[in-house]
Amino acid sequence: MIIHEKIEHHLQELEACGRITVKFGVPLSEYCTFRIGGIADIAVHPTDEAALTDVLSYFSKNEIPFVIIGNGSNVLFADEGVSGAVVFTDKLSAINCSGTVITAGAGAPLTLTSSIAGRNGLAGLEFAYGIPGSIGGAVFMNAGAYGGEMSDVVVETRCYNAKTGKIITVKGDEHAFGYRESCFKKNSMTILSTTIQLKESDPSEIKLKMNEYMRARSEKQPLEYPNAGSVFKRYPGYYTGKLIEDLGLKGYRIGGAEISQKHAGFIVNRDHATADDVLELIAYIKEQIKKAHGIELECEIRYIV
Ligand SMILES: Cc1cc2nc3c(=O)[nH]c(=O)nc-3n(C[C@H](O)[C@H](O)[C@H](O)COP(=O)(O)OP(=O)(O)OC[C@H]3O[C@@H](n4cnc5c(N)ncnc54)[C@H](O)[C@@H]3O)c2cc1C
Image (tube, rainbow, N blue to C red; front, side):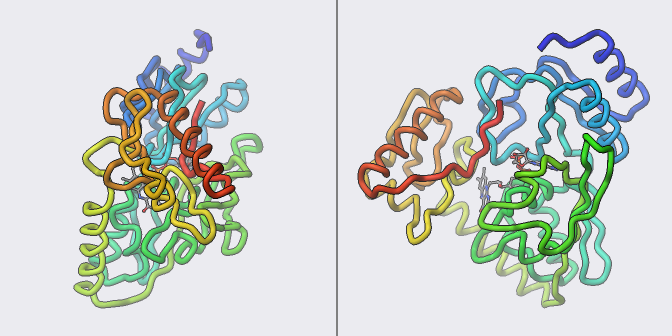
């Protein structure tokens, strides 16, 4: 995409007012846990919610495609990069705790939110401790682990529709949560903040649970190499990692991408992997699983072009 001078100038003006930081021609590999990806034409970090909605509305009016990224822990950016703007929510990171309710900005780290809940004697978010995402990414994905998921605790989510310029509040069932599913996957809304309902409990018990989950993560997951979490969704009745492991595929490599030797449900970036290496490896795994079990695996990781 050729960035029009007018657009560049407008964004630089917003930056001069301290409302956003903006960079042009940014390597996306620096903005995701996979450490893979080409160049983004425009990378924007709005400093607050009003700056975020203003900049999205501007992109929408000027027909500049954009994608929202939290912590980039569930994405694979294309080798060709992303045409248009990548908008990061990292600065919308406020976490407010009142009684048994926590309201967190889209960019608030999930693990920090879980930790703050625990310190305040609030149970319900222990499962999220150690998931390296943002609140926005976690609601979008309905992130979950160890028998819990965001749908158990989220009561309402404020979000922005860049086309209409309206902020709305999605409540309860309107989130349409399912296994790694939410309404936000379909409605293109940008999550601004979410409100979580927790229960009073003993902080030391909460802490014990969180430490146990963290220990299990570092024991089972290949945290020593860049990755984007579980590649595939669980297929009903099966553990995907086990299916892949049983086919003897642990350690199988294409280019720099490898099926983790520690956990076959993960692909790791062993050696300067490209997005194409990862995509080829995903296709290979799907083909092998289809041949062996007749089932079609579905990706959990989001491919961003
Ligand atoms: C080592 C490791 C372990 C993991 N363990 C788990 C686990 O146990 N359970 C689990 O569920 N996941 C796990 N994940 C995956 C990932 O951390 C979660 O899905 C997380 O919730 C994604 O959050 P994020 O901010 O990184 O989202 P991103 O990767 O930045 O984005 C993911 C998707 O959400 C969209 N999005 C992000 N923010 C917004 C927003 N504000 N508004 C609208 N759309 C938005 C993006 O456009 C993208 O499509 C793991 C990942 C890694 C690397």
